[in-house]
Amino acid sequence: MIKDGSHVSTYAHEDIKSWAEAREARPVRVDKYNAQPVHKQVQFRFPEERYAGEEDLEWGEFFDIFDREQLEFHFEDIADEAMEQRNTYQFHPRKAK
Image (cartoon, rainbow, N blue to C red; front, side, top):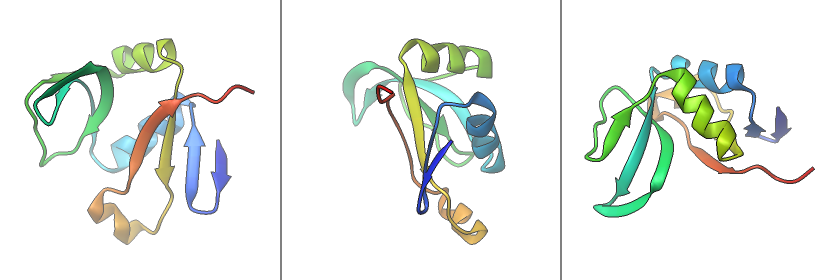
């Protein structure tokens, strides 16, 4: 895990799963975003959200895609009160080391 101020980057499965579970988020794969087709992407769905084009994933499936696509998880590590807004997160290609 790499921390830069309040921004954190990781590809550690346990860190990602812990972040999501703390926010009651579930892994999904999407094939549309704003009604436009996209390359099947992984993301999280929070309890009050549901969008067309989502497919529920088990954690194993999620991490298979995450690793195959060589993704890295970026999020803001901010105060617990901000969890109400679910925080900000993104998936990016891993940086070469």
